[in-house]
Length: 293
View 1 (cartoon, helix red, strand yellow):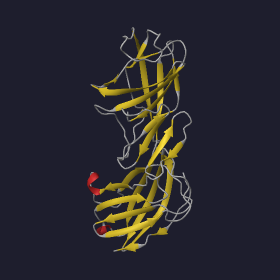
View 2 (cartoon, rainbow, N blue to C red):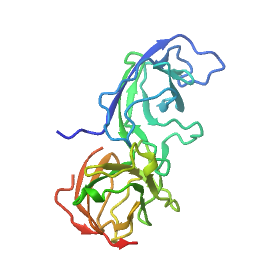
View 3 (cartoon, rainbow, N blue to C red):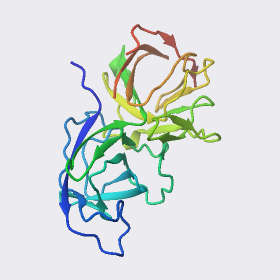
View 4 (cartoon, helix red, strand yellow):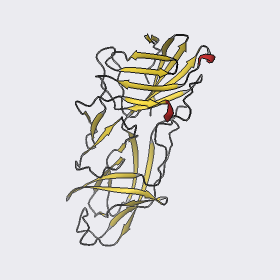
């Protein structure tokens, strides 16, 4: 059974007494406030690129909407618990909440958040969920905003196995920044941002590419590309440089993992197979890579 690459965060929201006049709260007339008492993963990712647990100091942003307006709150993971940066109150009326990781203290847009792939941050976000004073338990399913591109290497002669210098994905068909509207779920690419997504050998536990080695990196999702080579994938090892033009019609979606089986034999590198899973294109592609010294 293939693993599904998503996880669920369960947030138990506790009630407290009145907010002080100096605190800016949603529903200021209410005297009940929420805090995050517990966060737990229902499923952890096994690949090295994805985030599979929260660490001390990690922060999540909460986008909050009710009849009085909207707000943005951060919470930080400290001493095995979550602490809101400022109180949030709820009343009998419903309050809608979206979540996004990581928290951005500079965020001033109440309906969207920005993603990028140059830092290789695993951006996460949720759909809308509603709470009120009588229903304070919120279960959030966080989704991956980026697409995960994985390469599985095979060698016809294992004695030729090499050390990885880098893998880069770049081209005019690949944007490096985008905005996601949390209310509609739509993504908008930011024009003029086409920086490559790069993984270096030194960033891996081992840069040696054995038979069966896997290397993955994340990219901003792309629409169906029009021409072969609008996106290029560059493979650099200590004894090889090869470049593969991604074929026309390829589309990389949020929250999906695309596994490319890469066969290396003598002076030829080939893409043998593509698998698409949640983070399936049935069939096999065998495409020879041009060789460059």
